[in-house]
Length: 362
Image (cartoon, rainbow, N blue to C red):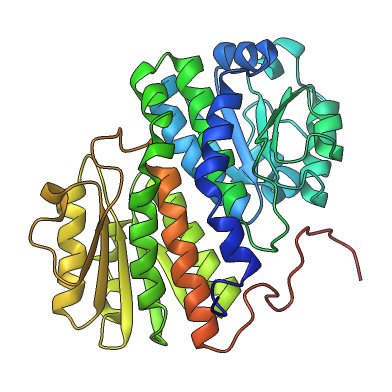
């Protein structure tokens, strides 16, 4: 077994397929209260910190389509420091919120551990303000689960690694399926049940990521549009926290408006494309390649990847584009962990980090 294969973080990422399948199964057994809260909501806020915030971004973007109503993502810190800028009803002010208004603006709080200090604080503040809360976690006995009105648990998502791997993919699958069920999106719900059977495609892409990680890139840019933007941001976080390589995430066409100037030999551009706009977004990745950057395009099918140069992976073709998103995390882990070892970092013990963030601790 190689040093890479011995990494705890990698071994846990390898089990993401099973964790995704278990999460989708759990979504079908969601508490009736969760279905009721989300189905009557006029507006939903999804929140988290770090990886959980990027997960919230994906869920909010996908949920707007599935539920056909306003859903926004915000960091936990914004709900603590500037709640009036997030909640229409003004939660967190301690007054002026009627029960009826608050009931129609539930807050979904995502936390792998259910112990992050900001998550606990937001749950307490929302309770005081009258906003119902839905906890999404991997630990059913956590403080967050005890505070929330309803708890959704990824049954196989918990992990020992400091950085999130299967927890992110499985909680994402759980939330996507919950929204598909509540919104009556039968095709999305059906395709999410097929994701586990497509794990070989994620593994094949991960093999490319592992190889690309043997180069010490000067900079990495990850591109993703729509719900995939949150996935791109999570790629960036994984690369930053494990290897400390300078990494940025952009919407693909936005990258063309200025940031593309960073393209040069020695840097890598990764494009996560699929569904509407995939051909236009893939063209931006190809342009980055012409400007000297190495490129890796992860698309849904050959038509989306037509004309691409550099490395190409096909993941989740034939699935609803949103359903394939949980498959895109494993290749990120392969690239990040491989690059960390290339840069002589220990990705199982990233510097300055612990598994749970408790603000105010020494």
